[in-house]
Image 1 (tube, one colour):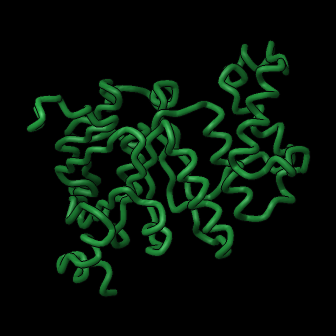
Image 2 (cartoon, rainbow, N blue to C red; image 1 turned 120 degrees about the horizontal axis):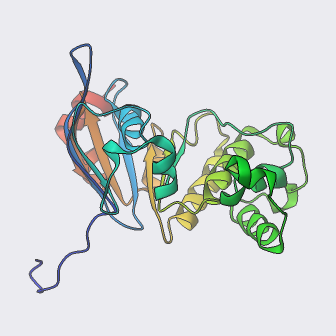
Length: 252
């Protein structure tokens, strides 16, 4: 209970005591992490800190040794990958996985929830609702003008936005992005920051990133991982001035 007498809202994602061991090496070690609704949380830290492994654990790609991952009140550690997606968790990997020989429209259409299952794909109709959703997402990711362009003709940044759009088609409550601006031009990074601010209205976004200027422009809160544990957490300013963070990460 907060001092005002109101209960503070529950986090959309609550990770508690999370550990995963690979041949005795603890890649994630007794981790506690809480992400609020409509929050952009950025996870930073040196290579090997366990950042990508945390995303793998949340989406079910890797199984936890011990601990709990509660998403919207549901325990994810016992669920299969596709059930976690259906529960509202979307994950973008470092390299964009789009259908390069299809148009932007077709890529987005393929990601429409009813088009995903085998039977759904067989009986999938391009209804007005599908077209409207595709056009809405294309506008949101800044690709409305490229809607009928083949995806392999897009710039690197535009391909990253298209993949984010493909996840947005499923309307996830939690969107996880692994180094979304790697390899982007300066202007594309600025546009990506604007995009993330837009899409965090109504959903939570968990980002792994190394580009500190980009982190500063998007993060509501920053978590620093080191050796599979939380080293520090708070605003970008607080984290940047933390002596432990400077020593293990920012000083290099």
